[in-house]
Image (tube, rainbow, N blue to C red):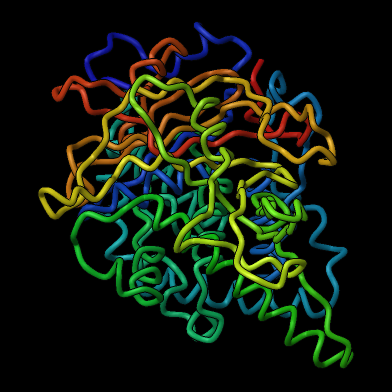
Length: 466
């Protein structure tokens, strides 16, 4: 949203879209060294309402904070946030939660005291930038007063920035618990409990935790958004599963498979069908997925690419299939189908391909047309809800000519309005502008869709198409 507007960009937003909730949070994320890969994905995950709600619920329970109350009724036209903090429910917390809450308050109070001198100037700078960014005027004295009132009322001390100096990165509990879901929950909670509806945060503690957990992201080099998303979701799932297993081992010796919030939202099932061409017996092997990585071709639609994903492959010569019925190697037909669709479908377009002639990866700027609504066709015949409809709510865009350099930003639909989140910058987009990121053979236009996020129509998400 530009700085040269004669009136507030927010006012323009509300005039153009009168049904857009005026208390919807819109926060940019600061880039502090090639972290656009992280920022673009974090924005999408925040606006993936089912995931955000689950993360907030987990974080509040862990920290003994007032629980997040979810309001899913008529969200597209609702003028309230889909989630909010229920302060009245604190009285009903059990003694353990009250103790956790006291510990959290003690931490926050100590943290505020230790960082008050350093946060004052950064808070002033932050709010000045925020007002300028959205075309809102305000004096520095008002900025300081507003910020001080906010910190005193909430005891969280993070309206100015989300940085290591103002987070629980120094907490002993953080070192013991140590997982990205906690830092992610803190980021989401910081946005939700912020008095302001817009601004810019610095997810420094999250990135620091990310660097500790995976050396791949420890440098300031350009990273891959898909690799980050994959690592983040798997890391959270493994951490929650380990927590549940430890809890189960204390209660019972019986082993049970535990599905986490990640599995509940993003997990689907693929089945690998292999048909022996001699005895015609069919062998099925299932595997779970959190996203679908599909090959792309020039001037092909997403539907066509998905069809190719499930195309028949002939196994012959050195690739023959060992048939249990024939008890020998046989020629066979192999194809991949979707046995179970997730509630949120992530599709990764494989735009980076290794080229033998130049001995390096290059980017495929192929034009791939994707729909705003889709019914997945390459499914098994016995799948539940074969006509399940998905609506596009977010796209992560890659800009550049190769995997080792470039830039990421995201396009996200919120309450019927498309926004571009480009690190700290936020702007409104028309739906027709989405066509520009299909891809192109023009080397000067390399803003290409890389990750597509589709939400199941009946999953109660704020991201539904109108």
